[in-house]
Length: 127
Image (cartoon, rainbow, N blue to C red; front, side, top):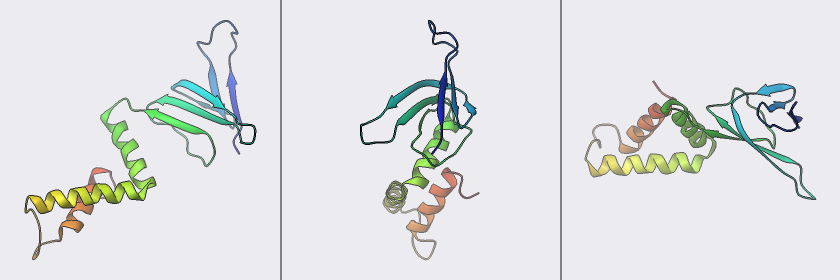
């Protein structure tokens, strides 16, 4: 379980507050929410600009606000790979579009294979 530390050297001014997870400073934090239920582990939710430079298994939640299309695609890629049902739903949607526009089909590659290749290319899994 990671150790979270929020440091503010100026009690009257929260500007310049620093956030640490396991003694590593977390940059670009725009907000931190803290929640704890009486029978739960404490939970910190960090809202950030851009992508975090850390990865860990924990109850720390990092919410990203993309600053660019590249960041947004990276967030989309992460979500698609983390949640298989979203990935397969997106692929099925691409497949139905390919069928509707008669872009594939036998004797060429089946629509499902083309849809998967397009999706993997979009999220950076295939070059």
